[in-house]
Length: 427
Image (cartoon, rainbow, N blue to C red; front, side):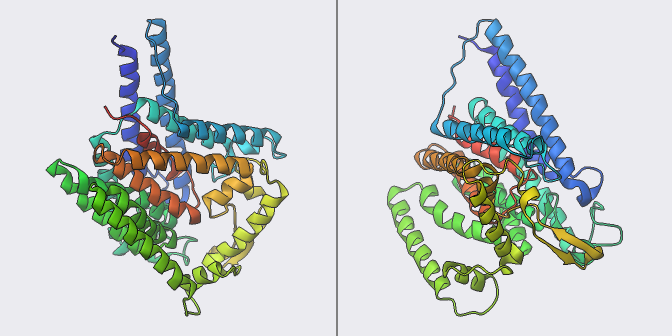
């Protein structure tokens, strides 16, 4: 039986995926870095809304024309559905009322979570892994990284910085460090944690020789990720390498050997970190954390943020304070000499802790269950083609860096698209 309307819905979904992976990373709006979050958020909302409305219209027309559809519900779908449902209950019972829907300038309320889930369900059921998506990601990351290279050279090719400033005026003339077309360097690192493993793994495993060219944007992404010097990105990259290598290797014997080497390196690394003799720096702070000592100043005040966020979780452990309400509940601020302003913390700086504080333990368990189910899918499909290993590698890297990340809408839509593609069936 032919399904012309379903085919049109899939065609629209294909174009939406290309927009999110190829256009969305490069879009910064018309006001530079000052309003990049607003610009990307509304591009995400508008493009997702158009895609959803057109797709739904095609499917309804198909049903009226006699087409009958069968959706394959996978374990990850069920887990994301539970995550979404718990978030709705959390929002309904929150004392912050309508704030939980959109929230402030972080845009991390329930509406955004609902859109993420919609992207996941839509791309996983109507999308298919395509070679063109790798090239779309390669093109966007290459442009983003090329702009970052120019900025590292002291230039401002697109006028993103405040007048008369450049990258090296960070934390002096403006209160952050901006590179590329994503936003601050922490968020750029999150984006590169998707692009670098996706492109390099696919280029290494693809049977099409032309795809070897994707090593170039992959290597550029790796280089900028290192140049950013963002701990979350570097930890994500290291963890991704240890986890991905045994899965991406197609030969079973070599994969088992790689697994043993990765396990040994992981244990050796943790042991070295635990015994680290230094007295300052990131490695020292991580070593102290393994010893159960998390000082307030660790990780640019991340220690203080995590400890207060944990206390907030204990106030409402089951349903949290409501989606996006951590910005209302955290009480951490310090004086910044940049423009004589007070810096206010509005995020847990840990995606998982954020879900725990905002929506409670059930939401976090559902989210982790969805991640776990998709990782199982990744392992099972690793030999089907080069696309599945690459998609899984990107997710692993991103989810590791999420332990130290803001998890904002500047990068999350791309992650949810890639996650959805991992859960699709190959043609």
